[in-house]
Image 1 (tube, rainbow, N blue to C red):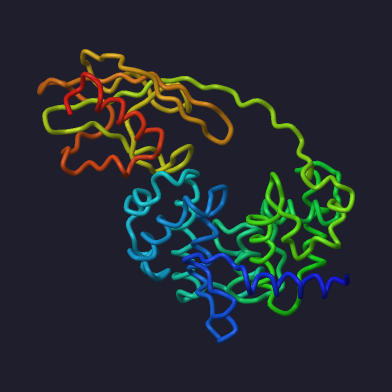
Image 2 (cartoon, rainbow, N blue to C red):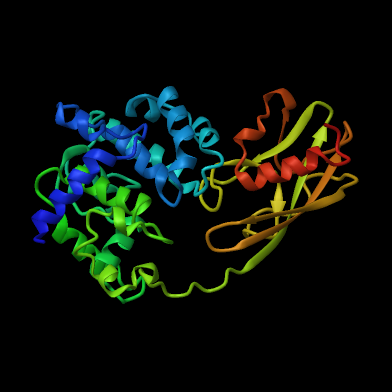
Length: 349
């Protein structure tokens, strides 16, 4: 089957089986002339980086309800956006989200550039996101390659080179198959194919529109592809986190803009990220447990200490805020875990 035939077969499958997503313009709507909103496409792509569709949907609904246009997001306060992002992880994405939105408003009149090259000039947008927005929102025949696409290409062409070394070869295959007509739908179709049919385990080859020309299927090796270079074992870091109350106030600390959990609300800590210092106040600190959390590159074990501060205690780090103004949902996951343990400990509720 020629490349054009492959794309036609895939698009016919996509027209019948496209996943419904809150940010997606369906192939039927596209056929009737509905144009995707670049803002929604961009927002979804940023949210979906290293995160699942299921995890993103509720966040996407909340963001677009609160900030329906890029200008609304650009005008938002940093702490509001960071609070809404809490739980999605990879918090640098939230900071880049704001930088990009503000650049679109300040430098482009509130309109996203319509080409991949133009999108690459925006802060926080890398090659993948630029390609995805250019293809999906503007139908530029840009090559979009995520993990699903890598898996499909590795199997279609029986690529034996392990990832990440195989990325360039897999991208070249994906580029060759990208059509001039409906490139945005094609990009989403390949991603849907990888997510629903050409899955990591037990691929449903009998339902695949590319089953016949798939070289890995012909060789019977499709479950083994793509091959991956073994990842080194993650190191473990250890530290301390302090949670304190003073009457109806809670001690919190806003983390520096740069670095891990940058700009997020949390509690004073030490010993795991190069920041922090001694306990934030003189108090009878009680050890109540351990918080365990895994980041991209390391495991984190935090000893949790809690205290009720006296009315005369001097706080050397952080800020005391009213409990009524404190929302645990605004915390990043690791700090929310700490709060949940502290709330169930000897510390007053």
